Image (cartoon, rainbow, N blue to C red):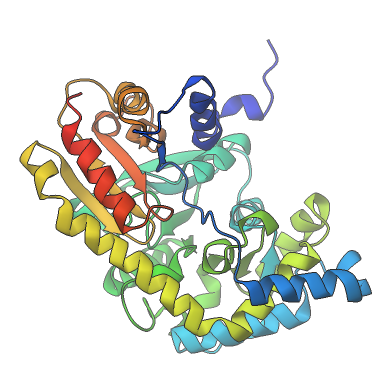
Length: 391
């Protein structure tokens, strides 16, 4: 039987979890708590929406093809923002705009890998990264995390073969929520540099890092262009999920290779989303600081309220940005318990089996909790429902 590229991978956990909801009815006493997807549910702030609406009505260019690597004004604005945030010197020629951060990852892999090449992916992993590697015939080398849900350099080095092309790090992490220390980022950069690999750093949740200032100093290295590719998303910062605006920072020579892929797939990023992202960079610093403060307050509420769960054998393995990552105390696997939680407790969580290799024992004990759409009252309800759940 002929198998296509898509047959090489699994069904997206988000698609699968939405299908779970089709046959479930929730009561007024126990409404659905949807903790499955890391995406803002509210629209962008009014000023940003107004800027997009004005462009839709009055700017002819908003309806036309644009540059493959994104509009020059947005590339310039993002380069300036990154320069400020990371205390480094980033130029617009080192920035490309993509149709979401998933496409940024896809373009990066296309520019680096051939079929049969290898990429090191810490596990628990972001499932769309694994799916794209599968569909491209690129072998994933799983790197189980160690203490504190952090990947270990020595274990990564032991995985490297002549076919290895890249190491992928996500910080703050999806699904675990943990923030990777600057020293760990330095160590992985130096590992990649020693072996002639590319270090891909996905910082989709950068704007919700609890640390002030630059989370790492990689952009300050004179030779960062030879090793580092940085990925970013405007979706979380400005609630632009439906407009699909992401970004890549890399050496201009690398971006030229990615441009071939991007031109073939989307031709250019959507104009309205780019206009919104630029307006956000220029006008929403204070608003975004408030969004960050709210997310950090929700994180703190989970940490403060976790004791009753801990007393029942639950473990809080990781916490930060949009996510809590937990281990359950029950005999059954997390994918079975996910169904029970949905039907008996009205909670939709993604099991750890969706973030780990098939058969990995740790995945059967774990869950990702995406709490960005649950306020502090909802977090208290979530913790109470989990504490009452008996498996």
